[in-house]
Length: 527
Image 1 (cartoon, rainbow, N blue to C red):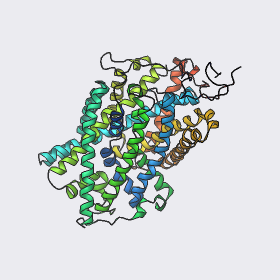
Image 2: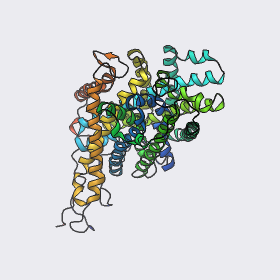
Image 3: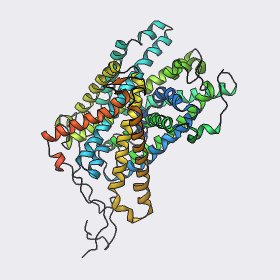
Image 4: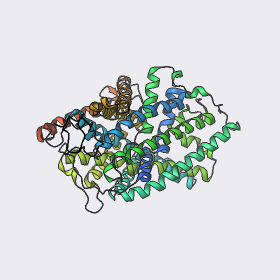
């Protein structure tokens, strides 16, 4: 990039200077601008992560893997997420595009890596949506059974056919809310996030109070070693625990996916993501400690390793902690609200990535359709909902424990596309490292460290999950169910990418979205 009039000779021009022209091939996609601010963006990030739902799905399996080191694993899982978030922040300031990981990876590494990164994000979202809807269906019948004091209603929800049908209904409702537009989604999100966080804090307070009073048979006294990940007995257990820990943080990047619809699109989404991550880390460690102190990690009674507790921690602990009254109903309702809030906000990254890939020619043009009134990617949103319902129905048939297997396979998908995005940041900004320590650290070393952690975890999990004994013990085509879901779907994506290249090669030739732009360089002296 040559020096310009008014710019001192040899002055460094970076992407944040007013003289920087930006990426000229980025396109406005027709979304409604300035729909949300910092508060709404932060609420959406927390909503997408859905802390109560995430804990309901992950507490039991995490204790099974690492025992009393559960709080340490939750803290350890926060580290790569925070490092990767620095990469998202840097990329979003330069390229505030709704395609996020897809667009950024194309810019750094080219169309093939970018396409696969976008595919990983979309599939991760579909997996989470299906899991979230399954949790919502389960707690819907638990709530009704407790409300009417009727075990028949609760047992009715355990039927596989009823569960699949109810899940499809929840997906349809969430699709409708997301289709109605960002403003509607934001209003629903505020209510559901506030409710679930208040109930979760109440649960922690009651659990700690009863544990301190020795009112639970398996109660444990707090020990600082619970926060030490180096006491986990094996690398395999640590990798499995971190996979689950990463799952409970997944979703903070929804605020980045909504960047074209956010006020201050270059800065606000990343700030919201960082704020939500810090808030979630504190909440998770508090829940892990309070639950462990109250129930212990035994394999009998309400111990966190007992079979009944493993399957559904909050159901097992609802009455012992909250009592057999209104508070128990509030806990069930909080899990249901958490899953519902996550459902309608998790559509955002999937639909926006489909939209961006379609706009830039990486997918069929049908996904680029914007609703004329609601200003959302209407067809992409609906397709995301349909894929979610079909995926959950298929997994219910293929997996003995669909919720646990999809959660653990999601760890593979998250490591893949978060890690690739982090590496994209480190490479994209390589020309800025000579400007000083700050860009070297925040745009290079920190994202690179986060990406390396996730890449190592991906390889470790791939090796472990190949064994059919991993997870629920099921197998698909002779390999473990978790491996088949995670790595197998990535392989399917590669085949689809090659097929689309034959039909529409313009994107892969760099004609619709360039990847070799010399955007970030030191300015040459003015002649």
